[in-house]
Length: 471
Image (tube, rainbow, N blue to C red; front, side, top):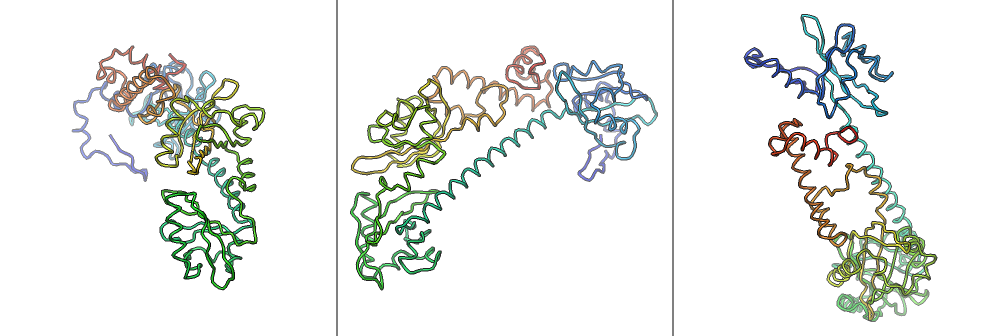
């Protein structure tokens, strides 16, 4: 038996007579079957005289017996078959891909023709490429979905950057540990008399008059404990009068930052709730957004959320309980509230949104808790129904991992989760047996303790082995 390297050369056995000594024709047939999915016996005129194939996977090849090999493939592949039969150039030892048409489906196959040196009938070894093409299609769909999500993220980031830079009042973002400025808007650069972009990397404390730096440090420490702490008044170098600094903490990529507003007395510095620019962005953002009070009654909602729940208007939703729309309200909402109370932020929480028409749609929820006299909860909801549609399924709705099973808690009853976990374990055991036996169904049935018919039935139920629609 020869192994083909990436360069196309062969590494033969040093002593093939010893290696193949004792092998019967049946043994050699088994080796050939492992090398390909099915084999065709072809005479010198290119007529198929016999086949060897798995009945359940490639039984359709039986109808080719007595036909010319070239007539069983599409027009594009007939020339490739002729090259294999004539043995010209690389076709004498290479693989050629053609497609068969069976019951309206194109079946791609890689063929290699083996001729005996003494002449006579040739053997065409075929490899079914449908599993490879299915993986390629899945990869393509996943890549397209990721590119669309990435484009959406870049567009959202651009909108927020424009909003940040065009605010009339000075705003900056600084690291929580050392107050190093990460980003500052144009108004902030004008306030400190700096060129655009020159504040990034500098310490906020170095921009404050030396007598007031300790006041800023004390204020930051107080805000970390109580976000309702009043603004601190400080003086800037080479500037008469005082400015007021207010800071709000937030976390990003497991790091804490401060959003710092500076009231220089020349611009109105709006609060978070009355900032018309921020409210305008929230209203127009493509992802659904909801803000609730401590009783989880909706106080703010954007148009995207109204469309998600099929409401006639945003006003119709104000004052309504958020639990009316969120999956299993007694499970998901309580879990969200507890996590927010403990961590103040949640990312990518899987749930379901129920609309007013009785339908439902899977979503991912990111949420934040704003600690005030009356706590406010902000929820950003992104529909993932399109993502699930883009990813081709395996033919069944079963979860593919333990992690996906645990995500069903709160969405489905325990009895149904247990049934799906049983199906998952059964499928994984069958797949492991098929891999262990090199896709030999008889051996797989034996090591699983099943009859062959029972294994075929389970393969069909789980959509394994290209059996769907052919049993």
